[in-house]
Length: 68
Image 1 (cartoon, one colour):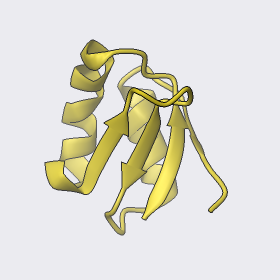
Image 2 (spheres, helix red, strand yellow):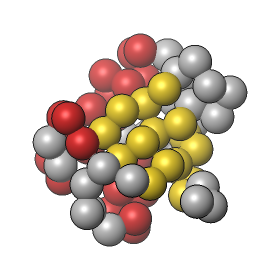
Image 3 (cartoon, helix red, strand yellow):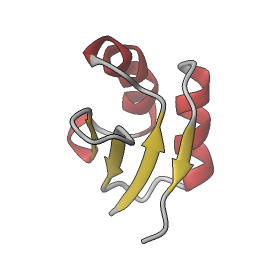
């Protein structure tokens, strides 16, 4: 499991990101916790970090891998 800080701010942002993440993994392999200050994206997929970060960028958002 990996966690990423994102620039998502609301459920609308998550809706914009969803199609891009769902292209590279299943819906049950990721979750964005909007209640945290860093809007943490948690991923349980084996998808490479650069592919996940690229998907966020394509959706118009930034992401940063957090140290585990």
